[in-house]
Structure formats: C-alpha cells, structure tokens
Image 1 (spheres, one colour):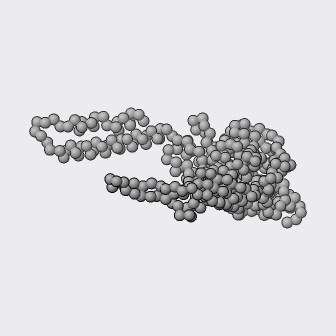
Image 2 (image 1 turned 120 degrees about the horizontal axis):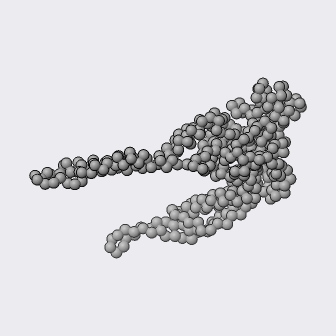
Image 3 (image 1 turned 90 degrees about the horizontal axis):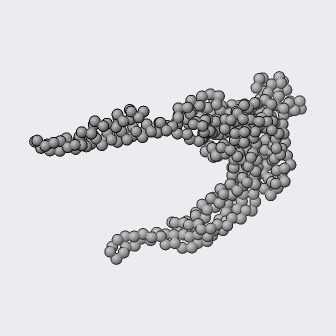
Length: 390
C-alpha cells in the first residue's frame, strides 16, 4: 500500500474514490464501502501490550483515548460515547435516551487493543429475535421491539488483568462418620480436623467492564470474550461506522473486581487442596493472597445493543459482537403471568373435581339417601371466574 493510501486509511477515506473505509464483518477486513478496496489498519504498535499496574496512575493522565472523535454525553445514564465524523448518534445505545450533549474528550488511557466485530447486524438481530420469542412471559411490546433497525453497534470499554498469586489458607477438612446409638438408630456426623496449606495460580485476562451504567450489568450475561486470542492492536480505523464508549471506571477501581474473582478462584483451589489430602468435606476459614505481579490492558469489545422502555422503566439488551450470545434485563407481563396462574389453578381444580366425581360415582348408592354435596360444585366453575377476570 502506498504512503498516500496509508495516510487516507488513517482518516477512514479510500485513496481511490474518497468514500469511507469501514470494517467488513463478513470478510473480516477493512475495505472501502464503495469500491471494496481492502486496507490494512494502521497501528502504532505491532502487538497488544500488557502494562505493569504499578505505572497505571501516571499513564492515566498522559494521553487521551479518542483524540480524533467527538464525545457525546448522555444526560440519561451518563454514558460517554465517542462518535467519528462518519457515524452519527441520535439515541444513546446504553439507555435509549435522546438527551445527548457534545463534550470534549477527557484525558485517559488509550485503548491497547480491540476485538473487531465478528457478528453482523442481521445475525445479531436474528439471535435477538429468537431470544425475545423464547421469553414466555415477556410483554408483547418487547416482542415488537425485535424488529429491524433497533440494534446499534458499539465498542464497550473493558480492563483485562493478569496476575500471579500465592495463597496461604487456613481451614478444616472433614469425613463422615456413621454410628449407632444404644437404641440401634443410625446417625451420621462429620469429624472435622484443622488444616493449613499453600496454593497458587496464574490468571490471564480477567475481564472487567469499565462502563458505569446499566450496560455493565447486562454485559455480564454475554461474557466471556476471547480476549486472549482475538484481540488485535488498536487502530482508529476499526471504529469507523460504530460507536465507542469511553471508560467510566478507572483501572484502580476495576482491579478490585478482578481481585474478587481471584479470591473466589483461590478459595476453590484451597478446597481442592484439602480434598487431595483425603477429606470429603471442606471449610476454608481464612486466606492470605500474595500478588507477585499484576498487569493490565485497556480493550474495546464489540456489542450490539438495544434499549427498550416498558411501564416507564428502561431495559437494555446486548448481543455479543464476537460470539452472538444474547443477554438482557427481564420485564414481565403481569396479565400473562396472571392468566397462566389462572389457567394452572383451573386445570388443577378440574382434575380435583374429576377425581372427586369418580370417587363419588364408584361409591355404593343407598336408596333414599341424598347424594354427597361435593358433586354439586360445578355451578361455580373456575373457568367462569377466569373469563370474568380477563
């Protein structure tokens, strides 16, 4: 590629026809949206780098994440969305609000890498539609929201952390003991013994969403991304035609979430270690984790998002732009739930009346005796009640 092509690729313009260069998801390459000339993304580094966490604070204030973009701030959820000149936004992809205001980009750590979109809008829409239709108690308004044009492509901000740790633990190991009392009854109890030990581990690419809005909660449902194998060095070219959210949670805060994940993992390792010593039951009373090294990187991960309003509340739906996995918040249709409960009650009552009727008909009949009152319940059928209520 000529120098001229490289320079114009950086500005997302084709050197041949001047039309915007965009990421072709089907071909997995950058190309001109008009003449289909392929382009190689221009990056400042050859590979995605991990950074020593001890140097994060200094790096935080040195550069800006998206110097060539305009940042819009949502007045509804506070999301900060980077928008280039070839991609406009009138609705916040995080909450559906139209309260968008322009603001200068704040200083921060630039992205080290990203995973380009691998799932196109049409596939994401199909996955989203299937997901919506599988929600039995979803309101009809939600199912109508799965029509085309509702999903927006956005890169979500993430921190990933690597760490090597050694953990000293203190706990108990137990085995079940069965015995009989003086009356011959069998009893079981667990005999516990104190144990101590040391375990460790290496954690690679623990993923923590850095968005401070509803999307950060929903995105947990579509994890993980394959950041170990599919992350490429950051290039501004990948963002052409998409939105990109600026991180709201700094790495100094996000690392605590990663440490919580590590703690859970080390407790599991301690339990496994206790079992390896012949115990069938485990208790971990205390752990002390030593971190030998912690590194991080800032990555942007692809997602298709849709916002939905129901009864005055906002609901967010996300499709993983790499795997196609769908996740979202769950509104419920009260009339549908009530109807299902009513049908269930009616069915149970009908079965009860049926079996009671059979028992009555099979009972010996006594001349001159009044029939049991139980058979005169059909006048208050639960199906009539259901019809009146709905």
